[in-house]
Image (cartoon, rainbow, N blue to C red; front, side):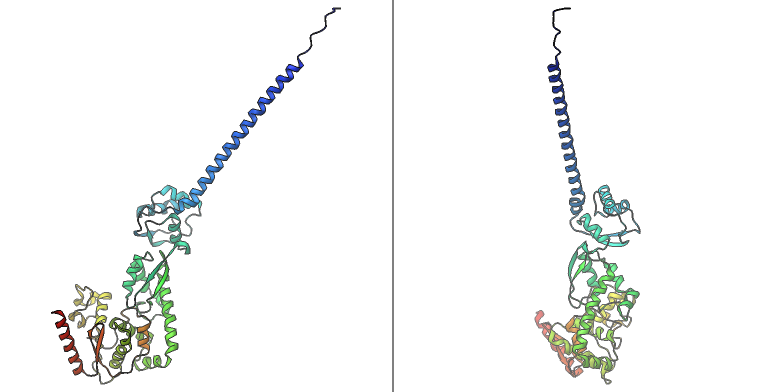
Length: 391
């Protein structure tokens, strides 16, 4: 046997090498995990940012325009893409693909109301969809209608305020089914659209606007009926008038009166002419009625050709004008404007007078007369004042 001892095994070196390798593996694993966590964090931030932009920022971005009213007709059952195409063509959407994707992921187009809409080219995507679906979140406009405005005047203001289209509102005011629903006996809602200030939905249903104005009229009429039950019964019975007749007369008072303290007196003149059997023919001779005839039926009266808003002598005395109270006895076919509370009250509770005539004498006031001779003198005096002021 050899006296030499065997060489020791390099266990410690191997252990050290193994530990070093393990340390490297751990470091690599830790680095990989940190990288994964970082990547996941970046991805999460990107997703959150994308979500925030798609669901918070983009829906609140203003449209491409500066607030111009735009008429849009939406077809039945539009797809998100076809809806986007219509809105792009109208100039209210500038990013069709993005709008299409946003509409798809937020519920689609099931709630979109087909038909005409009045949109604004600066509306946000969220506002556009709310209005197209006629939701309460679509926004409102404060709209004021002065006393004595016609439905034609109201229609223009409604379109200016982006509430509804002129044609849609005028169509609603003559919709036979809606008139029956509202209890209006006539061919239009003229006279029953109470002039006041309203908060109305943007791009609203024109029929709902008519309903809102008629509800306010009903409320005011009920108050007047309760305040003057005896006089209302008297004027309706003595003049053989229904509610529409009283409202028609109130609309004439509204167009003739300029100061409140003359409204009841003007009402008495009209009632005296209608009631007194000795007053013949029963021409109420109200200039604004003839003007209204040129608004609603210009084709019936040749004298309405070239009508600019003011009645001429030819228009006032044209027998073909159904609203001429110079050639037709009694009240015109219906209201000629929408009277306010003061004119309605004057029609319900007129003054007790013996006046049959009145003529403007300046500064919004009138000279009232009991006889034609006195009226003629008042007319001459008014003419002389006008001539003197013109010099």
